Length: 211
Image (cartoon, rainbow, N blue to C red; front, side, top):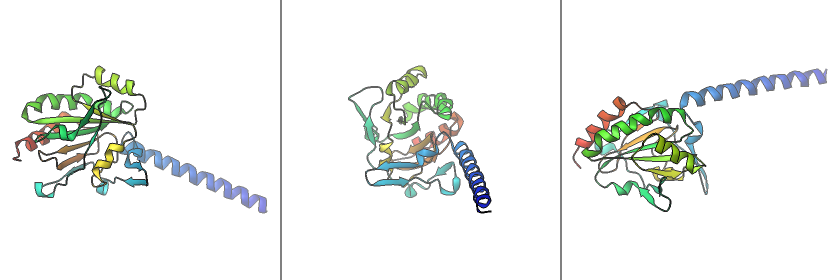
């Protein structure tokens, strides 16, 4: 009898674990390319970026409600030995896009991002990519060349540049796009793949704001 009870308990345990793993997989797929992007390892442990209420689009208005980020900089993906930073774009609207060449939605939105960049760069708009979790730099570089991406990206396989966000702004999936106003305050966050028609009106509106 004891042996039978133990066996039945084991079967119940295995079914419970299987159901939990299946549910976790569904959540990860629904969230985007990577549910693992919501935790960044630091020297003292991890901190979490959380999407409030499960939203995929967050706007910070009026401008007085917008928060600033810390110094965000890192190695230029395409030019070894060079550093690229948000501070390289003073007085400009900055679109920050977290991406990886391994990420299907990132590949899907790449033409839209390049289209909006080309359409708005003369309005005082800069784009800055952050390439994450690509351990092979050459693959990420090939993606940039093959997709004719003209704006720079930071090469950050460990995602340590996200420390500059200070845990105040969500980046819970890849791709994530943050839009900074001309004072480099966070005006919008998108936790999903974007179309040009999603992004361009917001960018152009921010470009018209006074500093």
